[in-house]
Length: 197
Picture (tube, rainbow, N blue to C red):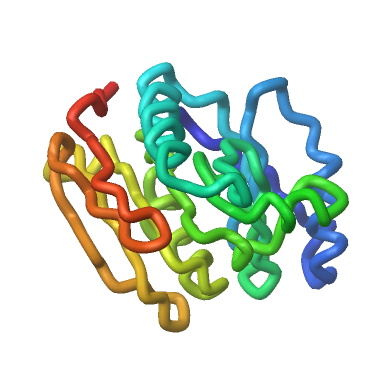
């Protein structure tokens, strides 16, 4: 999967609302993911079948342990205005009440309890570095990075305890090893069925 960077030169020096307007007006082919990453509107094609399968496995596992007051969303926009960021994480776990109370197509990132990103070959650095830093700065308690393209082989890393724009690594392992998700999930996430492209 590759990302096409769209230069929002009209947004230079403009406020957050102007950047969001450009994001909303970006005309991308159906199924593409449009995000704002550090003030740049990016467009990426739909994810691979392997990527979708991993997201589905995680989605099902999370629904087994969360209460009805929470939702597991695969296309929920999460906004971090302080970093000029509006991400569409692969999975966001957030209170239904927050999602239902907000107009439009995004919520504040700090409303999420967990953000899950599954890397794609061409834009993995966004998930590993920029989005992780943005979510940490926003105060998202848990950030799960499923990285099938990691240099040493496919890995799953759970980050937590955000401080500034930095997370602490709570768990790191290869695909196939269960990942312990702490409260409020109390789940050993099974990664044995995760495939790679």
